[in-house]
Image: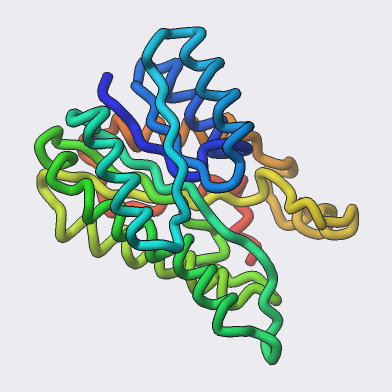
Amino acid sequence: MGGVLITGGAKRLGAATAKRFHRAGYRIHLHCHTSSKAAQLLIDDLNANRAHSAFLYQADLTQPTEIQGLCNAVLVEDPALSVVINNASTFFPTPMGAVTDAQWQQLFDVNTKAPFFIVQALSACLKSQQGCVINFADIHGIRPLAQHAVYSAAKSGVIAMTKALALELAPDIRVNAVAPGAILWPEQATSQDTEKVLNKVPLGRLGTLDDITEAVLFLAQAPYITGQILSVDGGRTLNQ
């Protein structure tokens, strides 16, 4: 297997994705921003399982110079990188009437702008490997979430970008996205919030990290799929 870059990989979905790809035999290039301690523990665990198979990079994805530095460092370590997974995300409410320019910038920089420039910086390598990109969208990029207009717009941008890059980078690089539904609750979610969401999920349960990571691995290894947005949401978008 080749190498995979996973942004925002220290915790939660990013960490689960790193573990799943590592079990599949990939070399792991893990990016983090502020969660360096958790990221290092994960890297140590992966390398204990298979020596010299996981590498850690720290960068602020709101800063273009740090994005380029991240990509340069990954290419030095692994000139045969074949998969990029843009998982890093910023999520917080932006009620209309109180949105600031800084909030807009942060949500678009991390969710939409950074994935584009990461792919641009690594496209020559991915082309040489006939590789692929998997972006993390969100079902709220398809159906917006109340009080989260800017986040929803940013993730909608990820969906459009995925399709545009799939056209532009074909036939050498495949570009797809996964749009998770209710998988991990935000830390501020109440029991009323969770009940309201689950009532709209036809499968009647919260999704698991495995539900997402298996979908991502599938897209990484599906050679005739590109430009697709795979909703992994238990059917929730059917009720929105």
